[in-house]
Image: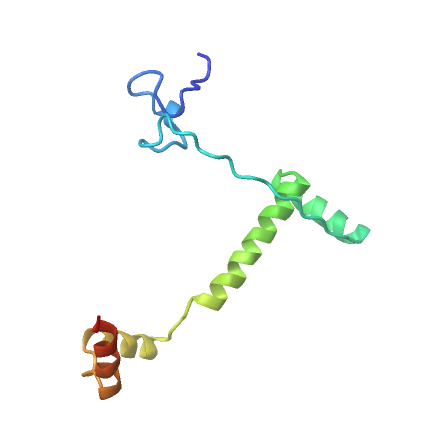
Length: 118
């Protein structure tokens, strides 16, 4: 069967393979493709050989391996900066503060009044 080029419409009722990667509400809409950017890097021959070996062990192209590894590293760095990890005691104190917050102090009341003023 030739591929369905109908932007999300199924070729046959119940043939979920024709909908892979599509959302049910995007049929007929033009969806812009993601634009790729170029990134260049200078490597030593040892670094390149190391990366090529690792890519081969994973069964991936060098480019795919490097981009994937760089993306994973970037996500780890960002996550480490934005995710707060708490121990058991600190976690319990945080949950208690959320479940039973203290009464607002005068500064908070004044800020809320300023915010609500037209």
